[in-house]
Length: 477
Image (cartoon, rainbow, N blue to C red; front, side, top):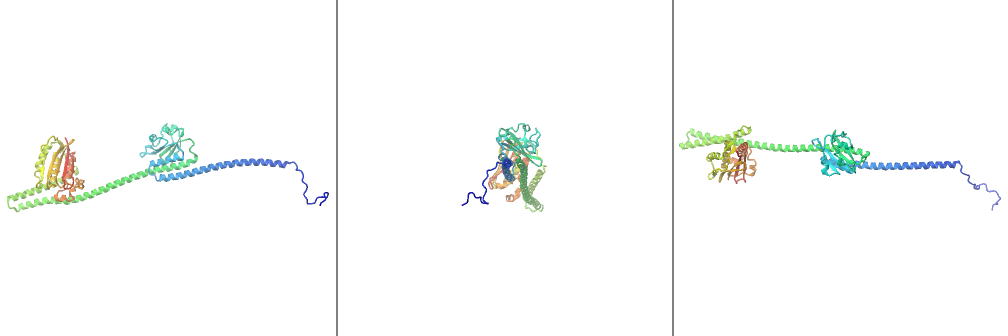
């Protein structure tokens, strides 16, 4: 046990001493603490400010990214849109959905380039915005305006014309042009609050303006190409039809030449043959000689008729056929034709029925000689193509015209042939033409002569074996 009075051990701690009062060093620590606190508060404000800026940048970046996505989608849609009305509808949706337009109208330059037509609208009744047409090339001629630059429009610019686009929710009007190759293809006017278009939106607007302008221009080109394609297709079709018609006409002409040579040779051979027999005295009696001369005369008359048909058609096609229109009575003309037709050959048993005394039939404006030629041709054809039954001539008065019907019970005409019967040489097609003879020019000449006399000729038949009705009509004098 240690002695209390003995000195403490050498290595034992010294007894605690009372704390001395704080000196000048302790005061410096407080100042540093205050400065540190101020720095911390300043840094906190900077961090808060940077955080807010970062949030705003993030939102701006998100909006920019969204706008780029929208522009890409719009570009895809516009690339597949060949019509200006669809282009206007697409850009209208962008202004409404992405820029918050309360009211908006999109104008597109029309084809003639003299007017901007409203193609799409929002926030107004269609009946109202569709009437707002604007002149081109300057839609606002009463005030100077930089047409190729988007800007806010002052009321003095449009003179109150666009007041329907303004209102409490959209007090300002923003002009968005669509320019391509120094041509204002169209524009949009948006009803917005001033300041609604942000600086970050300007690049998006610029890209959208270019896309829309190019799309409108491409739509024009596409439409022009489509119209040219349709025109070429139509012209190609017409050329094909014309070529087919030329080939058909060439075929008819070739057959006509071959048949006409035969038709001309036949009566000519008869004339020469009968004349040689008479010259050589190869007949048994005077009656035989007269019969040979009569046959030769008939052949010569038939040959003259064939040549007259060819000459008449040549005159008609060259425009040298003369027509003298005068008021004429049908009664006398029909009497003259009846005496001529009575001598026409016809099959035994075929009855020729001629109209009786004409009552209340006025005079007609015709060339008497040419009308008689047409009537005789129709009756001759009817007699030639009728084996049994009758050929009937009927006169009928209509409204402002008189018609003569030649009705037969002959071989009839098929529907296919009826469509081509008034074409040149169509009878040279074969079939009945070769059985009955003829050049196929008679009806063609009749058609042209009646048209030159301001009349018509028509054919109707229920088909082969069911007879035919030929009708000529001429105006009352």
